Length: 78
Image 1 (tube, one colour):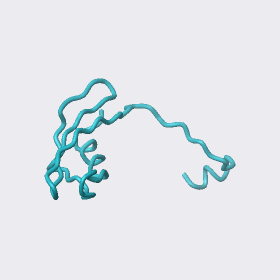
Image 2 (cartoon, helix red, strand yellow; image 1 turned 45 degrees about the horizontal axis):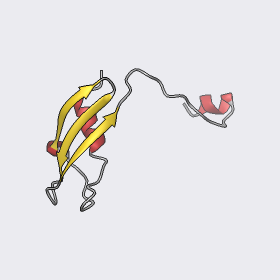
Image 3 (cartoon, one colour; image 1 turned 120 degrees about the vertical axis):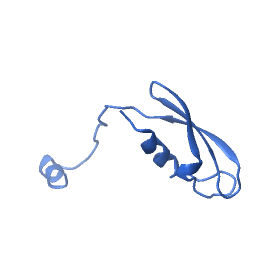
């Protein structure tokens, strides 16, 4: 199961659309979740503008790897 802290950490990689400052974990609240959709709210620590974030987090699914590496090269870089 995806932890709330991990979701908040992902949002900290986003910048405020008003001033460009990064969001901070302490300023992010999880509003709710429905299946793969997470709803969060945050406010910018710099300009105090608020935002709503909707994230799609698919748990338990391994993404398909698309590469042009040969099988031996792929094993080498694992």
